[in-house]
Image (cartoon, rainbow, N blue to C red; front, side, top):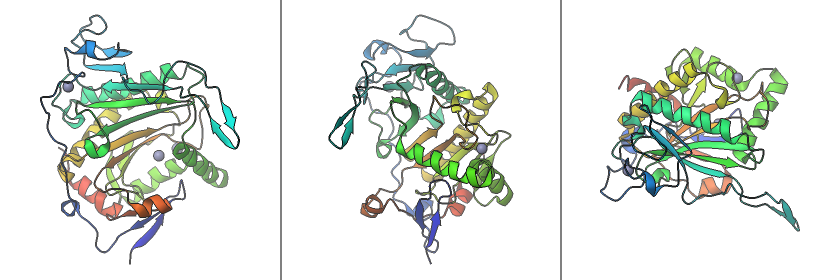
Amino acid sequence: MPELRRDPVTGRWVIISVERARRPNDFVRIPVAGPTNRFCPFCAGHESKTPPEILAFRPDGGPANSPNWSLRVVPNKFPALRVEGNLDRVGDGLYDKMNGVGAHEVIIESPKHDLFLSDCSEKAVEELFWAFRDRIRDLKRDSRMRYIVCFKNHGEMGGATLEHTHSQIIGLPIVPKRVQEEIDGARRYFDFRERCIWCDMVRQEIETGARMILETDHFIAASPYAPRFPFETWVIPRQHSSHFEDSSPQLIHNLAWVMRTLLRRIDKVLERPSFNFVIHTAPVHDGPMEHFHWHIEVIPRLTKIAGFEWCTGFYINPTPPEEAAKFLRDAGMV
Ligand SMILES: [Zn+2]
Ligand SMILES: [Zn+2]
Ligand SMILES: [Zn+2]
């Protein structure tokens, strides 16, 4: 019998195929292709082909927009939203609109074209999370920005349009619905139990172990109880904190190890698939929240969203999270 499972934060239901569970080999796996020779504006030496940089790490120093960087942040050349101007919220009868004000930045994670993030050094992965932290701290000074989305699209199925390894940051003048749903759900849980749902989740997952993938002093990586997608994984700090940008250097250092290890295991088990990850953190202008707990959601792209999902908001997941976790746990150190 398939199982209906409810996500305790959002209340979203998913259908999990328990009997004919799809194992890694059952998916039509499309590994992300290796590099092509096409001209790439993100490669070292092509600094003039991107808009001027916003932030860069140059271990040996050097002027802005020169080579010898290990990571660069540049404005997106084709931004979804623009930094200039006022919001000008207006109604159009029963409809609402405002100007497309926001920020859209690209983090170039490595000067080398032929590396995936999982191939990069732990230091490089750490720099990526430092860049997310620095950029949130800077962007939140702009009072128009209500929420900063930090995410990565990798591979064609993951929606990446450039193959050179990169992540993105979008500053939004509104709090996105998905995040608000999590905040509201967590608030309801907190009002009832006076505890944070993610803190409870961390405790229970450590105790039962069935969905645990890896565990450090600072984080757990586990399959959620009601995942929307096969091999969906959540990385959750063990200590309560609502805002990612408040993370200490030790936390960022450990997060880099956790994320790199997880991505390498996903590469091993699922043959270097396309994936997305997103940092779910609290809205930047809200103070510390007792009920919301930042985390990262990682989703390997193995299946496509079909009509049923569009129609219902329900997801059908062909791989039980307990099995997915076992595969990723057994992939061991890589
Ligand atoms: Zn490149
Ligand atoms: Zn918590
Ligand atoms: Zn989330």
